[in-house]
Image 1 (tube, helix red, strand yellow):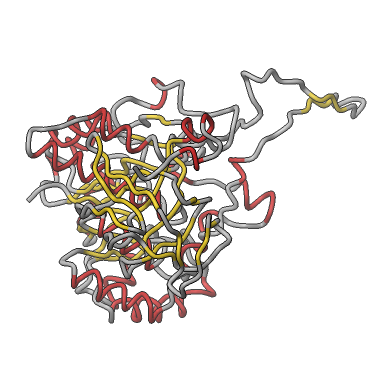
Image 2: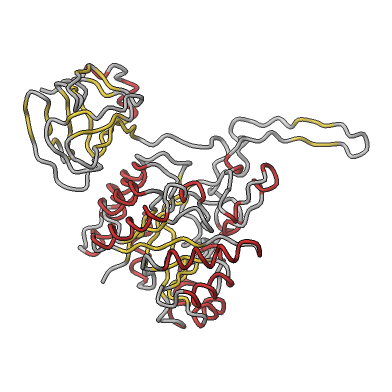
Length: 432
């Protein structure tokens, strides 16, 4: 059995997308006691139970995030929450606090425990203690090196190891940050981080004697995003990680990110893993897919090199960069219609990102075809399921628009942003 690919499930739609695009497992939860309250609110107990059922029907796994840090007043609610989640029979609980670990083992001894990266396991002694407490898998702290993980596995061969390979990085050590707690009262370690590290800041110097405040001018190159960490991208080291033989699961961050992010990231790493085992690893193509996603610039983090050896982990000039592609549409679960995410026009040609081979067609409604290894779609008509015709549809148009032929659910239409800038009027394209 190969390494497990683990993707974020911020809501039911993104869970289905992750599984469709090749994730072996997903992780998510309801808002209670999760470090992603905003995404957790997308699930109720009822819908999460359905998500567990759906995931198991696909032959995949789902892990529940219970990785917040509760106060005394919340412990009774926590007990009930663990009972509720255990009744759904997920494949594991992801916990961070020692007390939560103990409580989960008492209430639901049949549910495997995965230790969150928030527990900050940096050495094999800590790993050993958690293993003795019943932890099946450790999600390694982002500051741990691959060489250290080899020592973990050598001393604790029965312990599963999971590492983050892609997604947002916290400015603070292993995510232990209080900036938004200080500025807005939103406590990061209880799931309500306001991402204050992504803001632009103006720096000042104060004369302690006079109280005079001086604004410090900064050059454009140095920037004002002084806390903004680049996104993690370990695709260049996937072969090295898998060659080590000590990593059991590769984890993608991003429960609050877009459906397209979920699809493109799972797609890229699924192909990378399969390519590795088939001895057909094509780094350039996988990296190209990841670059299509909006990001803050990429960093290789600390798994391969120590933190003090890195000097390119911060993006001080902008909070978010465009990816190479803009998303224009997403195919609905029915496979026969789509919703616009940007301006889709009659005659416009769009690239297709999908998880299953499409079927080519050429009819009065449009064309679907393959060209230079890329599937494309062009509409001769844009007609809603209710029969209304359009010359163009925008993201504000919530009508379901018919496809020229069925496509796999959760297929995306996209265009390279460079080409959009060069061709502001996409009607210059045609379906011929």
